[in-house]
Image (cartoon, rainbow, N blue to C red; front, top):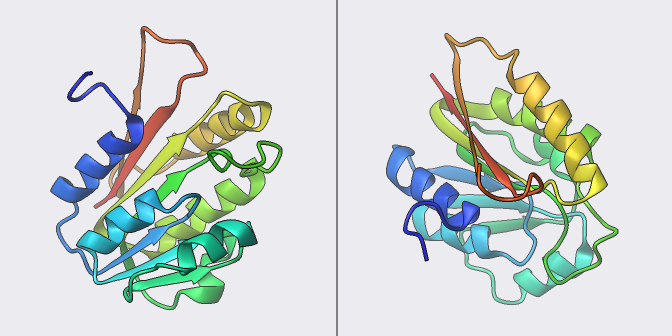
Length: 180
């Protein structure tokens, strides 16, 4: 297995662990099976985690850590639940691994969430977005999110895309945004 060019979620974890300086408050925008939430809760004092699927929230809540707040709602409603600036936001867009693949993140709510997330992200904070493009909504998410991110002012945000060149075009890609 590759050490760097392996799992895109592991790469996201590495970037957050090593490059987010203040580890006070984080958001896992897409709880899923809870792996990213567990990772964040081991580093940050407070973690908000969102998922629209009650099953995902219930499964995670059964053994959640004290520093995690599970929110059974869409990530595009950050401002409804969070009244503070955050140091880090993670996204794994797509569908719940092992779950119903017809239930996916949607480009309109994902884009709204990213816009709101950038507003509440502290200066020096990092947002990571894993985009899974192996389904039709994922391709739409990729297109609209990347087009929006191209418009961010470079004096306020650094935006980098990491993708696999020698894999299928539908392989996931990782977007990293650092707020100046």
